Image (tube, rainbow, N blue to C red; front, side, top):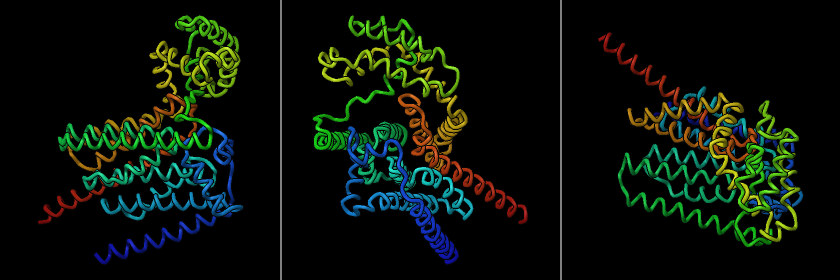
Length: 421
């Protein structure tokens, strides 16, 4: 017991020293601004409120030093969350120094990449790791923490991407009630709480947009990438499925222009083709549909995009699935295969061995798989969108391998002891 206490104290002191050094290093580098940074700083676009309001708070408190202090806070929060994750897993599996340092290095990569940027990824990464850590803690201790609902609320008002947490938790509750506790009352209460959190987050975002952006609704259908994807994968004659004559004629012109520019999926020749042609696709659609006639008829350009996108999606449903899967395997083929292998393996192990480590790997790989497919389905791929899931999965896999090796070594020791006796 004394040896373990000394070991933990050495690790804690070492972690504090490393964290101070990292914080000073990043503070000395200053604050970096990306293309999207001004939108959050000035509240000039319809956005989820968490990050813009965090910026406002730091500007009120620190004034001229607001952004330097914000990036310092982002780095500090990330380091704290990484420590909490390591502590949670160490309590359960008694990790050695090498494993801890390896996991620390893995989880630090997104912090190095975006920690001192004014971007949602900077705090979003920490919140997602904290959420998943408490979720893992609930699996280990076989009780669901109310803190998860609070974190879910914060995530829902942080990035639209985190709506997948609702589906993720629903799947978790469903598996629990079918295969484990069979407590339907608990299941109904859990789902009801999810709906309450969704309603409160919806209301919060609506009020924020009403105050800051003079809008009386939740975030608009910002389907720029979504409608662009549907146009990109459509054939030249897909316009025929549109029932409204005016929309059909306009869409015909758009698809013909896209084909003329060789900006459609038919001319796809490399993984960057969509990124290089999406501006042309958007331009052609905007020229035909963002007109006084359609704005007067449908009231809003986003409504026009929604109407066209939904009809194209129904027509392109099988082609869209093929496109998403191809995109997933061409952009990060090793990553998606790696995730899928561990998902299948842990699914089998979870029901075969009923070991908690298999449950942890299963749920984290499920979340990672969901996050990856969501990105490939509705957005132009950017590596930073994978920060929220893939790095913690890699850390969990390291712990999983460590646990297997430890079990193997313990079994060998037991066999040797029996032989010696």
